[in-house]
Each structure stands twice: as structure tokens, then as C-alpha cells.
Image 1: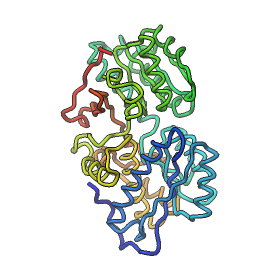
Image 2: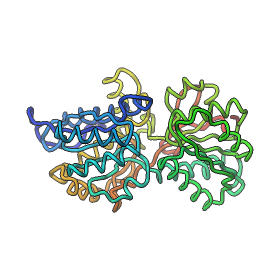
Image 3: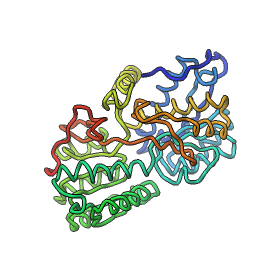
Image 4: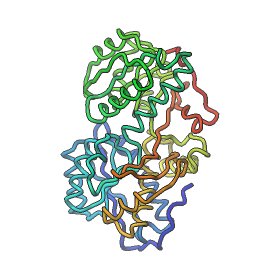
Length: 393
């Protein structure tokens, strides 16, 4: 379903410029590129239908791997390129700084991929988020544990022991705090929590503390480098709980190359929806995959791009409804949207709360199976895919 908003004939000379703030260099570049590939595909689909407000959409990249670089990128894109709006962001800390900088220029900052809960809780008048956030990732991981994993392991939630590990920034902390609260509400035994630096070069202590607690389920929220290091350390230390769950990352080729298919078999990841979701769950997901392959000559390198693609679609709909890119008008238009779940390729709907957070953005759960990643939860998204190897790690 690549047909998007109905629009006006695109003007040849005047473009609608969108500054895309993401890391395009350094260790996070793969993911910044992947997010922006989603924007580029959405821009092409929008332009085929007349663009935004009758203007052809142009994506201009702003490289940012740190909050300081995010501020500099906004200043450059607003001052040099006079962009109409900003979009991002792979890194939550960058989103926080860049969106405040965008406010200085009275520009909309539309976030599609950053997860930290406090981004919308600030009430920044130029900020909205169309994608999932810490609460939705935390709640989906809790649903996975208390529903699917408890049944698969033959235990009641009250008999299930869980260890929560997380990287120490607001991203990992906000998700882990919510997981602990909801798991304990469900009666699950949270036998420990650990926090670590995402830049750590040795996480042996983190694994040994978890191993000593003997959890049934080990859950980690982090980035790719620390997640890979934790998995390698767990393998080397013989730490094999019945189920291992990663939140946010761990489902890309980078992790496969670091760990190997055998080590990853059965590991679950709460992640952004992928194009293999059932067509009824995410209408247009399969067409999205074909469009991606046609443009880039390969399958998506990471799952973030389809969420970015849908995010720009929703932003375009809000701008068209507002009749301008003026931040408060766009956010008011977004808050008036009311589309049910399963309206977009990701399975998302569009219903924004008072803080301009889209609350209909459930992540999905995928599993490594024979070196490939397949969607396994919720069952409506999984289609014919089945859970394997739980209890055999």
C-alpha cells in the first residue's frame, strides 16, 4: 500500500524540505541510514501523489551522533537550507537536543523512531512522535513474558523469575523501570536489575550477577554494541536461561555476524515491525519490501526503516490537514486523527494523546531461527510463523 495522501500537483521549482536528523557516520551510521531510507521511500511515494502541500518533498540529511551535533545540524539545516520541518531520530538523546534547537526556529520536529519516554512528556509545542516509545516497547516485552513465554515454559507468571538488564541512559532506564513495574503487577518475580554503559568494553560482571540469580528469562534493553557484547559474554560464561529477550536491537546482520546463527537460535527481540508481518496486520508491508528492494537492491539492513516510512506518511497527513507546516497547527491536526490499529504497513494506527504521542504503535516480537529473523508475536502479526527453541538455549 504505497499510495499515500491525496495531494496537489507538485511544483517543479519549490520543494518541501525536510531535515532528517540521524547519525550518518560512526558506529550508529547503519541505523541512521536505515531510518532515512524509510523517509526517502516515503518521499518518493508522496511525490508520486503530488508531494506535501503541492510541493515536491526533498529529504536533506543532518548528521548527528551526539546532542551537540544534533543542535549544530538543526542550525545548519534551518539557516543554510531553510527546511520546512525536521524529522528523526535514531538516538533519543539527539532527538531531545535537536528538537529544542528546532523550537528556536519555530520549526516542527516530528519524531518517528526515538524511544525515550520523556521526549513527549516535556510538552514541547513543536514536537510530536508518530512511532513507538518506551512504554510500548516495555509493555510488549511484558506481554511476551507473561503471556507467550509463561505458557511455553509451563509456568504461572508468579512462578516465573526474570532478570532485567539495561543500558544506563534514559532510553534503557525508562524501559526497564516500566518493565519492572508491570511485571511485578502481574506477579512475576523480578530477581534483579542491572545497568551498564553502552560503551563498556567488558560486561562480565553484568552477566555473572544475572547468572547467579538463576532467572528463567533474561531481558536486556540496549544498543547493538553492548547487546552483542552481553550475548558473547553470556555464551562464554555458560549463561543459558530458558529464554533470552532483547529489546530495541539485536535483530540485524551486525548481530548475526558477531554471534553466529547457532548462538542466536531462539533469542527473541522486541523490535520495530518488519515487512514479514501478516498482510492483514500491516496492510502494504509486502509492497513496502518490494519498493525497498527495487530502490536499494537488497533487503532492509535493520527494521527501523518501515517505521520511519510510516512516520513520514502520518506527518504528511497531519500537515495536509493543517494546511501548513506551522508546528502548533500540525500537532493540533495530529491530535484530531483517529485511525485504528492495522491502518499502516507497521500495523500502527494514528491516535495522539495530549503530549502528541501516537499511542497506537505496538512493536512486534521477532525470533532468530536458522540465521534468519521472523516475526512470532503477536499472533496476528506472526501469521504462519511459530515460536521455536524456547527452553533450549
